[in-house]
Image (cartoon, rainbow, N blue to C red; front, side, top):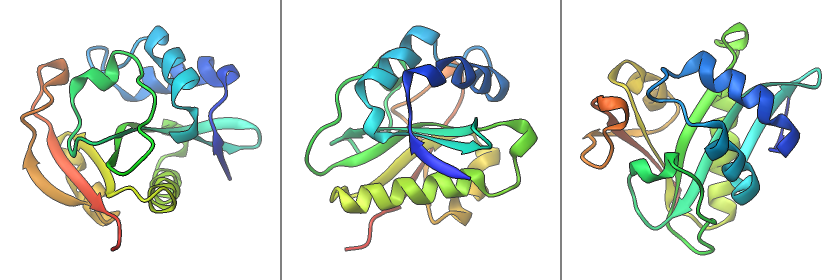
Length: 163
């Protein structure tokens, strides 16, 4: 498996994975995905096996500690200094789940956060995914009051970079 920065020619496969893993009222639009590829490619990583994208992780460098729903509407350039990487998506092809690809993408993003002196990674997830992120070193910080994407209750999970 190879992890690399996203390219615009990944768009079609990324949209397939987006639709495969997210409900219609959670998935971002193709326009928003294209904007993220163009704007935050330095923190938008894909996992490839045999030249096929099998997963991706998207992160936005911001001062905010918790995800806000505006990250799904387009893309703002990453802040240069400090703050957190706000993960807006972690998606692995159903055919490749359970093989450590998601954990590898998270580990690579942690390394990137440390290299860029970020305070850590932050994301929101459904309650049934909390244990997965805790297993990957995240702290459950309870219900989100900054995201209600799709009308769902989300939970804040944070990984703190070592001091």
